[in-house]
Length: 329
Image 1 (spheres, rainbow, N blue to C red):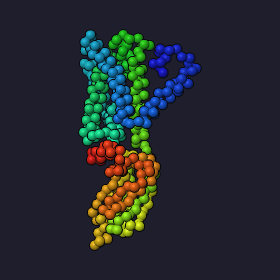
Image 2: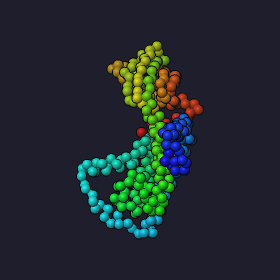
Image 3: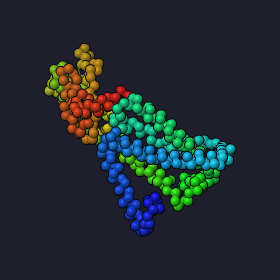
Image 4: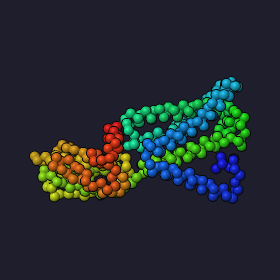
């Protein structure tokens, strides 16, 4: 609200209520955006957001370059490590601060099923994103120290405002750029947090029914998205079926799998793997598999399921995308 109050006079008594209303007004469109495709809607919005954030940061970087050209090199760079005290705790805190600064790279795989070529795109996005972030951080800090001393840098919580005041002779009360940039960063962090929460924190309960329509004996086993396995079931006749209920904290990032194995007549034990049927679940649901004469498992019921490989119909493109993801990992 600081950016708004610098333009409009608002009664202090109404400010707390207006802050909440403004927060809801910003949050609701973001929630609405996450109801649509990552690639077609949220992705474009995030690209625009990133462009605007970087544009504001570039103002600070170019202001530092301008000041360096006008006034020459700052004395801050003469002895950059003069007062450093090396300690184990300091090194640990330095690593922690660095990880916090680059937070976000680990979320690249969250929306991987929406990426058309993850095997190529994810490494490029990871390394180019880290390189860009590191370059911006270094350039921004160099710009700060071309104008500010170490004591000035440490003495204020709003470094960008003090920097602009000294570098461009901008009055403190009129320095809206840092406030806008800070609030934009928070806003687009909400976009990322909502997307991540929806993708990662999807808990569910699935009831699985596996039945046989083959006269040949076959073993079958179900594996949940979080790695839990059902007992190894033996199907000797077409009338046999088995049920399995499972509760998971995360059911959206990995496929459900039904593996069918040969029946070794000599030992009566499980033989070699015949086929793996994979499908993705979306929330609570019931899945129904039928083992066919060729000993493959076909999904016939898909209540609460996104897409079964080979049975996606109009969602064939999503099937290919998810197949790419499986090959990548």
